Image (cartoon, rainbow, N blue to C red; front, top):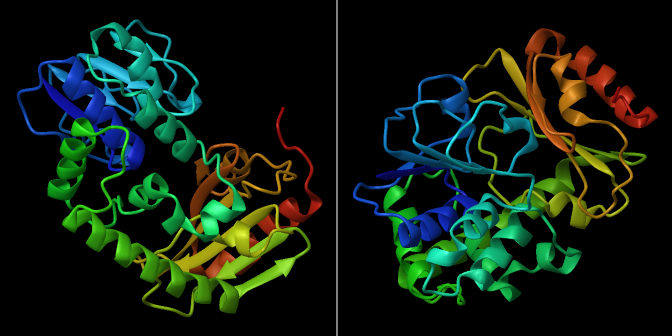
Length: 297
């Protein structure tokens, strides 16, 4: 059997649990949800799909996203939950000989963004949160993700931030967060409760904590992040998200962006706009967010 999951903290914990519960005889396959959605994922019989949309070729499936719910019968488990790891933990509870509950609680907290402003501003004080920030699909490094699965499988109650490879990543994350903080402060404009971060004039945009804007601008209820599409110079990419602290945005982001060729969840989503018409569409989107009326049926 083979584990197929996504490279984020929840996916790593899913792999830890599945390796303890099932007979896994192949390396973990790390992929993004978009690969499943495009129908190009290398899914095969015997695969255990976790924290990803369903693919009928897999043998077992676990997930927790409401948008991925299916009505056809399948083997595995799906329910709305803070993390896919929690769904797996409940499903295999009687098989575990190790207490994975402390690790699953961390996956629940981090994947649900159940964070305080202090945790976002100072992740170095919170080992599991800091470790989670070292896992990024932008840095293709299956060997590192596999390494974390091994470490967390051995000691699920302790974030291995003293491990040399993990420690180096943690240092880099903290440096990147500081650079990203300066970018946010320099390029974010507040329009009432809407924070607009316009990075179109920059080629090399630093990575950083995606919740940092909400901590730096606590009065904002939603952030609009604008940048040039790195794969298509003629398009602009928008990422929009509700604040995890000021929860007063009434707009369903995914539903709103579906009218602009994008989509997502209620609290976060994205779309790609033609650069020639981006400003006009952006103003329409900002007007909806500023009005802050529910757009749900």
